[in-house]
Length: 105
Image (cartoon, rainbow, N blue to C red):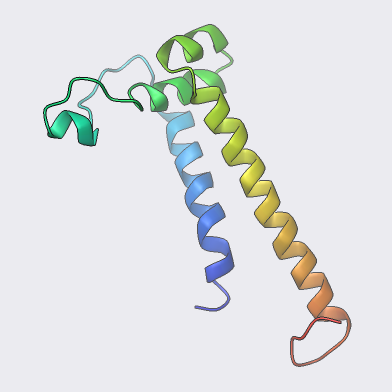
């Protein structure tokens, strides 16, 4: 578990981005919004998946029309994934250089 734990966050984010990027944004499906379940008509994340799908297809106007925060979410999640990879790589490099018990120098 110790070896897997640092990778869980970036794997979940990357999997989510890949799934939303490969979905067909023209298909309207049922909503899984919590606000819809409790009877409130407005859902702040409504269209976010469609927006991300349009964004990955290069249809930026459709992306923004689906949800303004779709492109923002792609950028934020991508930057977070890169930040985690950088931290993992730096920690792996530091622990391999000096001590055999895994301590950093």
